[in-house]
Length: 292
Image (tube, rainbow, N blue to C red; front, top):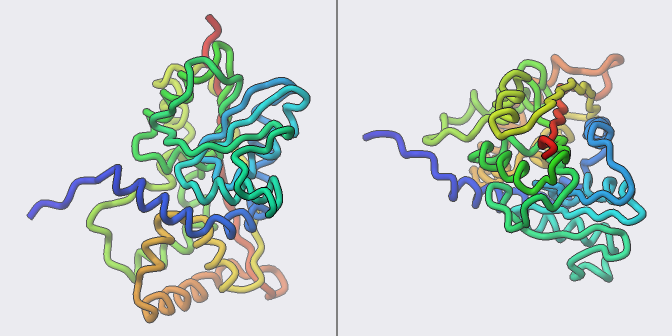
């Protein structure tokens, strides 16, 4: 019997469920990725009055910072396929008493559920598109890039980040190695989070979507964890659909995974023997829609 084909709709459904599950914890872990967020926003070169679209915004971590940078007169739309992620962002922006409000009003920040591969937005309606650690999650990344290009005004700028090559991201690779050893290979492979880890591949994808003046810079950062449990939880809080699948495993299997991760982490024990220190490499890319 042949292997089942990849089902993009099912994949999106699982990713949506996974990120809805971890919305609050994903937001709580923002400090681990603060250096990367700063690098991406710096590369975006935002200015007052700009209109910005933040794709796969999650709980609006980048979007909130971008909204401050485009004031006065600017506006940021935070979009994501996972509506609970957006609701978490709205709660954190507006406060618990305004959790049901759809936008941040005077702050220039709005939230709207959207599929990055098929945006219900007008052509040439934004000055900048942001996509932090998102492109590799899309089943059809070229469709998402084409949509980014379409909604940008001529001369508009895209700024996005992706994970680097697998060997340069032990932050994720450590947990993935344990999962690969203990669990059978999935019947249908998930798109790799490292598929744009080669700068040449990322540059070619942007060029194929019609972008010009592509520029890619590495961003290295380190995450510290007090113990193995903190690392494993942080991995789950990033993993989206993978976290959803892991949560459905028998408890004994989940315990075995945690034990395997604790052993794997010994290679990353911090100097002094307390806690663990794991490095990560991301790529920050910028490009333009050609002026007309």
